Image (tube, rainbow, N blue to C red):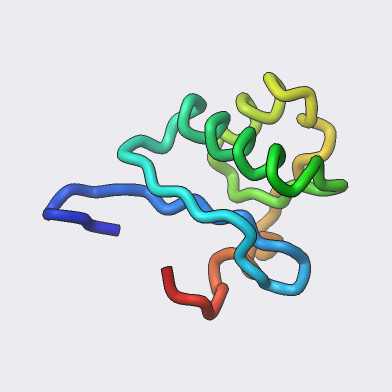
Amino acid sequence: MKINDERHYLWRAVDYEGEVLKSFVTKTRDKKAALKFLKKAMCKHGYPEVVVTDMLRSYGAALKEIGAADRQETGRWLNNRAENSPLPF
Protein backbone atom coordinates (compact mmCIF):
# COMPACT_ATOMS: atom_id res chain seq x y z
CA MET A 1 0.00 0.00 0.00
CA LYS A 2 1.12 3.58 -0.53
CA ILE A 3 0.92 6.27 2.13
CA ASN A 4 2.10 9.74 1.11
CA ASP A 5 3.72 8.23 -2.01
CA GLU A 6 5.84 5.84 0.08
CA ARG A 7 5.47 2.06 0.06
CA HIS A 8 4.30 0.54 3.34
CA TYR A 9 3.39 -3.03 4.21
CA LEU A 10 0.19 -4.15 5.90
CA TRP A 11 0.42 -7.07 8.31
CA ARG A 12 -2.84 -8.73 9.40
CA ALA A 13 -3.65 -11.53 11.78
CA VAL A 14 -6.86 -13.30 10.75
CA ASP A 15 -8.64 -16.08 12.63
CA TYR A 16 -10.16 -19.20 11.07
CA GLU A 17 -13.48 -17.41 10.41
CA GLY A 18 -11.86 -14.52 8.54
CA GLU A 19 -12.11 -11.95 11.33
CA VAL A 20 -9.19 -9.52 11.44
CA LEU A 21 -7.62 -9.77 14.90
CA LYS A 22 -4.70 -7.38 14.51
CA SER A 23 -3.49 -4.97 11.82
CA PHE A 24 -0.07 -3.38 11.67
CA VAL A 25 1.66 -1.13 9.10
CA THR A 26 5.45 -0.99 8.66
CA LYS A 27 7.90 0.51 6.19
CA THR A 28 9.90 -2.71 5.93
CA ARG A 29 9.04 -6.36 5.44
CA ASP A 30 11.91 -7.98 7.31
CA LYS A 31 12.51 -10.16 10.36
CA LYS A 32 12.37 -7.22 12.76
CA ALA A 33 8.94 -6.12 11.50
CA ALA A 34 7.61 -9.70 11.47
CA LEU A 35 8.86 -10.28 15.01
CA LYS A 36 7.27 -7.08 16.29
CA PHE A 37 3.94 -7.93 14.65
CA LEU A 38 3.90 -11.53 15.85
CA LYS A 39 4.76 -10.55 19.41
CA LYS A 40 1.97 -7.96 19.51
CA ALA A 41 -0.58 -10.35 18.02
CA MET A 42 0.40 -13.26 20.27
CA CYS A 43 0.51 -11.08 23.37
CA LYS A 44 -3.07 -9.99 22.84
CA HIS A 45 -4.60 -13.21 21.45
CA GLY A 46 -2.31 -15.97 22.75
CA TYR A 47 -0.27 -18.53 20.88
CA PRO A 48 -2.13 -20.11 17.96
CA GLU A 49 -2.09 -23.80 17.15
CA VAL A 50 -1.14 -23.06 13.52
CA VAL A 51 0.38 -19.97 11.88
CA VAL A 52 -0.40 -19.84 8.16
CA THR A 53 1.89 -17.49 6.23
CA ASP A 54 3.11 -16.86 2.71
CA MET A 55 6.59 -17.94 1.66
CA LEU A 56 8.36 -14.85 3.07
CA ARG A 57 11.46 -16.02 4.96
CA SER A 58 11.05 -13.31 7.59
CA TYR A 59 8.12 -15.19 9.12
CA GLY A 60 10.18 -18.33 9.60
CA ALA A 61 13.05 -16.43 11.18
CA ALA A 62 10.72 -14.55 13.53
CA LEU A 63 8.78 -17.68 14.51
CA LYS A 64 12.05 -19.51 15.14
CA GLU A 65 13.13 -16.75 17.52
CA ILE A 66 9.78 -16.90 19.35
CA GLY A 67 9.96 -20.69 19.53
CA ALA A 68 6.94 -21.43 17.37
CA ALA A 69 8.67 -22.47 14.12
CA ASP A 70 6.99 -25.89 14.23
CA ARG A 71 3.55 -24.22 14.08
CA GLN A 72 4.15 -22.48 10.74
CA GLU A 73 2.38 -23.72 7.62
CA THR A 74 2.99 -22.35 4.16
CA GLY A 75 1.32 -23.31 0.97
CA ARG A 76 0.01 -22.03 -2.30
CA TRP A 77 -3.55 -21.30 -1.19
CA LEU A 78 -3.38 -21.67 2.58
CA ASN A 79 -3.25 -17.92 3.30
CA ASN A 80 -6.25 -17.00 1.10
CA ARG A 81 -8.33 -16.15 4.16
CA ALA A 82 -5.94 -13.33 5.07
CA GLU A 83 -5.46 -12.17 1.49
CA ASN A 84 -9.17 -12.01 0.73
CA SER A 85 -10.42 -10.62 3.99
CA PRO A 86 -13.44 -8.44 3.12
CA LEU A 87 -12.94 -5.94 5.92
CA PRO A 88 -11.36 -2.66 4.83
CA PHE A 89 -8.32 -1.33 6.62
